[in-house]
Length: 330
Image 1 (cartoon, rainbow, N blue to C red):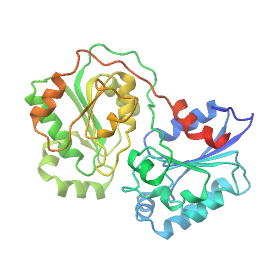
Image 2 (image 1 turned 180 degrees about the horizontal axis):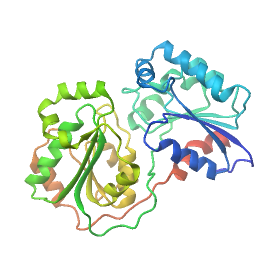
Image 3 (image 1 turned 30 degrees about the horizontal axis):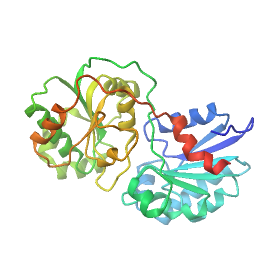
Image 4 (image 1 turned 45 degrees about the vertical axis):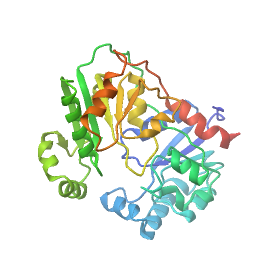
């Protein structure tokens, strides 16, 4: 990646509550020489702010624009403004960013069918990339895959857990997790399991309870209101033979979880067939099982895998930033 001049400044706008994403990206930008300021991509930073932003309300755009002006724009100028997701932005706000930044680059780690995000403002900035295969093709956007934020770890030849499940509850995730775990039972793969399902807020709790009341009762001891500490998440992924990944049905991009498992030599069981399109994942790294498949399908796929952990492959944040920024910075 082209090195910025000494003292170059970057404004990083992104969902600050999205796991450790802000820390990983700001740290990588700082390592590259940018003095980095971090701002949220929607204001106010509250459940109310998330709701009005998700609904695409003009109130969200006005409040976000005002907060950005007051907190990080007025009186400042940046060599790079990087907007990740940008759900609280609209075209006017994106146009405003160009007055405060030499280069403005956007990135979306959701599918547009699930979250419109940059569709409201992508025409106003130099470059917007996506992680979603379908959106890249239909919108003519560059595809930049995600990365692992796990630190480099020694590959463990034996694992404590047969499977780990660490995910936020939404859509049909609980049903898919149950399908996979029952299939592992039927395949005779017994062993300790690490299951941590995050319920984001009271609204998602009610929606998911209505959607799957029996499964909610079945997994009630594994559903939590607080996010799993990052160190525990790293340990669970690295100490599992398999980890479960469930991409939203309207999403074709490959999740961070898959790249983290890849870097740890942990196999992924996923519903996302896009892993077969990625040059990073071979047949030994990921098993694709559609929702509703019978237990015998997963059992046969697992039986065909070679013994032992697969070869680990690491796609780090530096590779991500190089692909995302270099074409815009030259």
